[in-house]
Length: 49
Image (tube, rainbow, N blue to C red; front, side, top):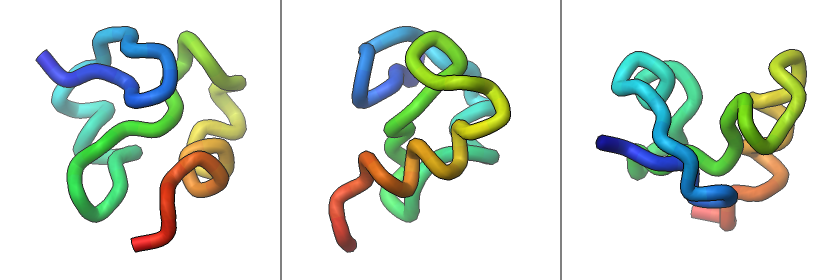
């Protein structure tokens, strides 16, 4: 099962399809960031590719 790279919480495959980076990693999830800002937080936490 996929997990958030930041807090290691489990996330769904659907969540991964929507919010993961180009490598399929999730850098923010509802457990560790505000729902409204998941995409922005993920961009901030993701290393430059």
